[in-house]
Length: 610
Image (cartoon, rainbow, N blue to C red; front, side):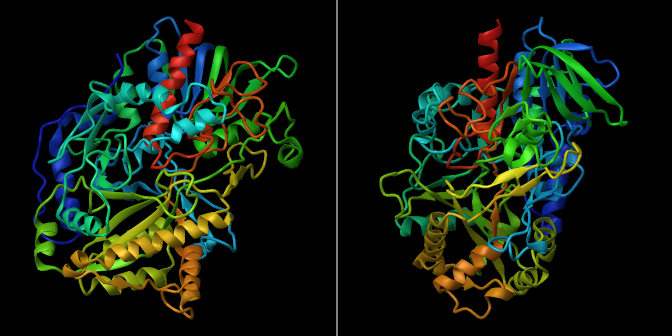
């Protein structure tokens, strides 16, 4: 039986007063009271097996992250299979349970703390001209530090994968694997799409976030702007706006680690080695068959373990290509030879990097007295963005594809809450002058960001090794906005956000445009195309959703690294299963899709070997 996120008693979480400290205190205390079991998180996960490993396993899973946790749990349900999981991090910290402070986990020991390489065309307004790109380094991977948003893309996303030659990955075919994981609890005044779209009884707890007052105001403005209200953003239609779903249960995070590994502690056939990093997959050069893995333990010892059946690489969009390239799987002429690694299989590993591009600088005020009272004195701060509403829309570009291609996300900051601005400055590496301009604005009242996010970026980057040193961070070249279509889509998204601010409803609540200070854009005419392009290249960046670096595709696809069964082309006994295999990103935050990939991978493994 798989694990699941623990249920807990229901505790009210109303806010006693204004300010970030009150929000933090109330949320912290409420979360502590949820369940005494939550205080003993380290005791719900498998014990570190560093000192009692076998010499050989049937399966080795590289990474206990979002997908790796799923795969490890599912394949170890077969009692005769010995399964080893090697994770670079340890158990998630207790504070990761608290949804409202997830941002504080960034740049800590549970984050790889990656940055993009400097570039003159993007990330100009961040320290060192580099965008921060957090990735989870703990059981559960990024699901232990992310924003917990649960979306499944939009209708047609997976049909697009299947049309490209990925048999078995259509919308209809992947739905069962979404539902298999899910235990959906609907909260709110509307309805949901029912059992045709939602699962019940799975290990991953999913619920709709409670509607707070700002969300009500935004909903009124979106209706005035012509958007229809969706009863379920992961139902059959995503053209409009609706309320967020998240992997939260009774006020606490439900990560992949909690959902899938917490119930496996007593399995004798599952070993989890923590704080250990895989340095190489051992491959026979003649037969091209995988024989095992080599890794470094927390104490610095080097170990190697044999594998009988398969190695499954689930280290994520940055680390999976790193592991493959260190093992001799990657672009020979254009990279591996340059760093001194012998090529075993020449594949385009590390290419096809793409990400959801987000713009940070569409700002507004809300000064209505009733709004201020309600947002400060009521509400559950599991609604960590300050609003539970999200909006999809279709721009005028590519009229032949009617899927939504933009999303509006909303973030609120309370008046005089300079500590939140300091947190944003620190975690995002925002330039100090830009952060100060936000602080000036919130002296006058509450503020909120309307954040346009492009859903299907055309720009493609790459991940490369910095050297043959397996412990060195790889280099990330995202190439944001290198395709002019992304720039045009973002400019239309900004204009749509401004139109929302200018609706009569939003004006009634005191909404008005505010200018974020960015030095290099100050001499340009405000609200001109040139101004917004400058701002995009300065304070546009990642929404932390990188995918695609071990692209899935048929043998006829020259860019593909894995086939539709997730097996690495031209090798025996190795699969990749995580966000890196996505040929094209989904039109939403990808967490749920990565869980689905883990479920489908485990199912394919069982079908082949049982």
